[in-house]
Length: 586
Image 1 (cartoon, one colour):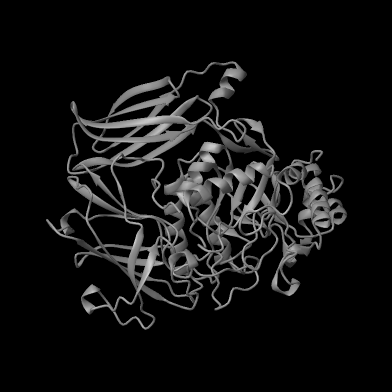
Image 2: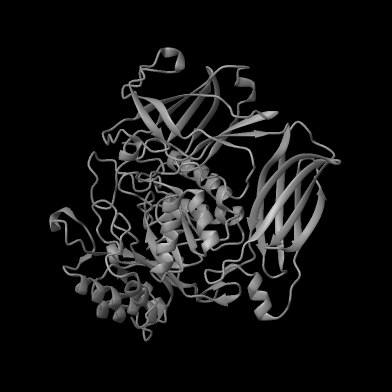
């Protein structure tokens, strides 16, 4: 098991220190303790970054634990002029003390946060890091995704994730350093947008050198003066003009060309900071009824991926497991995934960037509507977009799914306002990607119309979306889940239509039927293959669809509707799955 890969792949420094490993731990169900001064009874050990509900953590306790404390004694391997402490994700609200001093507070279970701990470090001896994580299992007004609010997982919800579940790490930096980096591919002008922001004591006389290359070929080597601590520039690439040569520079699942980047922050000739990164040149958009990749219509073949593992829950057991998931999706004939109700670890996005896999990013839902719930959602969604904006694999943002958290869209204007506000806010934060306001049904503001239809009869599914029926007629009718597809005032305007959930065939010959769940069922491998092939044929051949997303990638706890078992072993030969996915001969 490897837990020590660099956790922030698009802003990499040579010096860093993982704090993953064995920590002290204490459950505080009654919330008896308020700070480390309260003489906490450290009565167990936990393997960070695995949640205590997981077997991988060494605890494996899936009972309700609304508050958990962590403690680590550590020695910094190296100290810079400043030392930063990073948390990849802590579910849900975190408070962090170092040597008794409160150094950080953060709310939001799926996004990172950082603290400058320089002034809290002691001159010598072990440093004492304490974290309190509060995560009320009954709170339905916070973004929680697929985490069950009942004691035992039921239907389509899974075990909870409490506390630290992504990497904790230290980073020594200079007194002034590169704080944020944002890449924007500008396909039409064959340019790369580069935004950098420095942090620290110095606010004048700073410059940044940006070197872009592919292999041994240098594409750009430019120096920009920072205005205060910021620079925002467009870097022109040489456009070969000819399609074949042009395509060699473009990123796609078929040819995932990445552009390596080195950035050097200077004060005059003095080097303050050096970071390594990467970007890519590609565009995503919609044009009439088609999804477009790099200016050409592109058929989406996606698979819904929950991002859970049997023994480690939302945390991957290793970086190799994340890479393997990307490889398996491609081996099964898909060109993308819809990461469902989860902001995935940046290491997964790194492998999707490097190996070539499209990713739809979806905000984990709350399940009760209130101003507080919307405020929480907006804050965490903003942080997620900021974290993942520069990944070329991310092609669509989805703030809501199936009206979860906004259950009265047909009747309550406030619920509609929430969806429309998040749609427009997402476009403000990122003007380069399509946004689906609410995926599945009851669509209002959206760039793509997503339909969820789990009809297990391929012929009935084909007839429902036949080309001899206009889209407007289709949208006027009631559809799966008893929901209308578009809300009043938001008729179909010609946007691409994607079958964003379908299939869900349960097949597990080793489990009793009453212990498993799916939308339809197959009892033999042959029957599973035939039904999958027939459903995928409909999805591929229906002219109305600009793409599809099959449910789902792997079995997830009681849901046995994966193409893979929970351990990622395939239920059918991979080449057989791939042929059916691509509607090709086996």
